[in-house]
Length: 81
Image 1 (cartoon, helix red, strand yellow):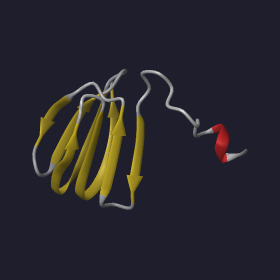
Image 2: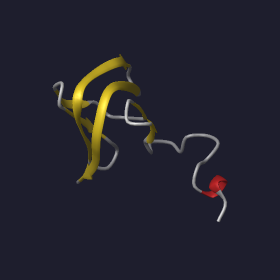
Image 3: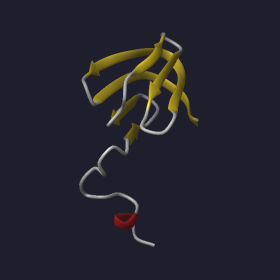
Image 4: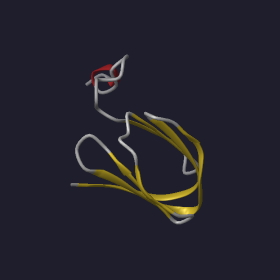
């Protein structure tokens, strides 16, 4: 199976795109807002459910209407309904 079948060239409308760079950076496109944010946890609302990010020294580097960027030590990502 080819990688191009997993990663569309353009974001699908309303669907989040999540890009993890190592364990230090996370970009979330097409989010629906931040539910909770501390240095150890970030909970982001998505089109369907939410994304729980656990880590240490997490900091929102950029926060826009549809995109956000988080830096710090990312330990886990969990999707929840």
